[in-house]
Structures are given as structure tokens and as C-alpha cells.
Image 1 (cartoon, one colour):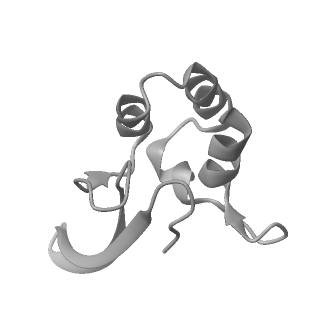
Image 2 (cartoon, one colour; image 1 turned 60 degrees about the horizontal axis):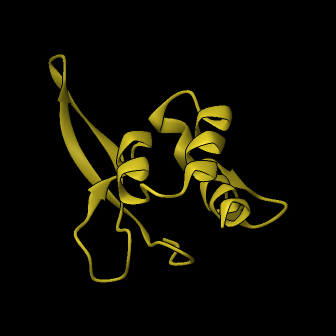
Length: 89
């Protein structure tokens, strides 16, 4: 979906919910191109960039839940997590 700084990927999957099935989008990232894919979570981002304390602080200030990491800023045309990472480097 977006490869600036660290790639973000998405995948649509079918899952069971109650007695029915739903489709949902799962998000992943890799710390560097070609490295192992990880679920896009706040904890995984902190582990992937352990020395970037500013990034950790900004993640904590901006996001309460992992699902918020895929928020997109239509005005700036960038994912908010990417914008925060740019501010931290």
C-alpha cells in the first residue's frame, strides 16, 4: 500500500463471526524492504524501531488502538503513522 520509510501491506481475508463469515482487511509492515512481515501493531512498530524513542512517544500520543494505525490523511495523502515516523527521524 505504501513503501515510504517502511512498507505497509494489506490483505483481505474471510473470517468467521458468530454463525456467518465476514471479510476484513488485515495490515502488515516490514521494518525494511525484504524483511519479515509483521502485523501492523503499536507493539510491533516499537520492537521494529527500538532505538527511536521519539517515534515510540508519538505513537503513544497519537494512537490508542492498533486499528487506528491505518488512518489516512486525505489532505496530505499519507498514512498518519508514516507522518509520525517522518517527524521522529
